[in-house]
Length: 342
Ligand code: GZL
Image 1: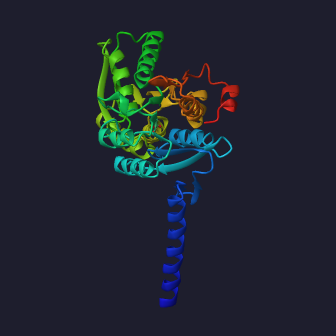
Image 2: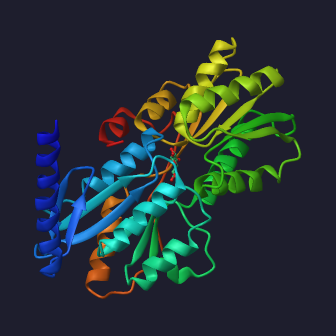
Image 3: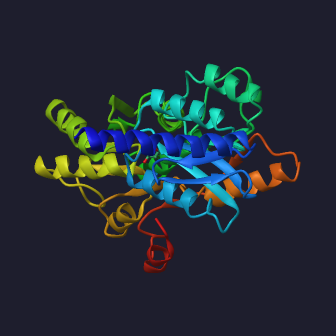
């Protein structure tokens, strides 16, 4: 046993000397611990430190894939990717690690909007540009990040409200009381804040819309089902469910069906969802989900274009929105389903 420990200690000493010598030679050594790969500065690649907030939903998986498919060696990048598993403290640690490795760019999807000033100030003082992906941060000093690539969440919420206006009008229900429950995403995330504000702003225009309760369900199927079950126990006459992402919608539909009620076109409860991932669009096509407000996770290409502009010394916008649509049974065709990569 002692012999083995001695060998391990010697191996660590040799490896440390190797890494130290690379650092001392002026070559920064970047390591992607999760993939156990590393590159020294001598290779002329753009080193990007990326903190993804987690892997809570089908949307998040597609968002991660869109980034990993673009920030590749053949595209001239070295990507150091970190999954924070929904914890802000993990993202702050990852960003500090990127700063200490002196990466060229930091890209991160902030799990919540607040609590970033200190670490973003550290990145700014280190001269490392920060780019926000997907969600937003709530900071007074807008110079703490270069730009954001993502969606307009308030607009998404408004689209849901405008669809419901049109739906109720087409079904002659403009004057009937409409009982609504809302499944909200991760508390304090910009997608939750924006969608809630957007939908509420339209609901406020309709005295006959009654939002019975809004509850956080963390963008996951399990929590979506749990919260929907509690709504169903409390409210026997729910007309509409507004679910702020498809994963919560899947859980909610399971709960509704287990309660003996039906969903979708011709059903007891109308389903309004967000994200428009492939599995949900199939449910739109079959009439189970009435409408799905798209949130486009394909942000890797735009992020790479922005970094290219920064590398060329070009000015960039404060915000880049990705293209998004609204899907109902009318426009979810087989061709649409076949073409989509998420
Ligand atoms: C939206 C994104 C949200 C998705 C959820 O841009 O932040 O987080 O709507 C995901 O599916 O969990």
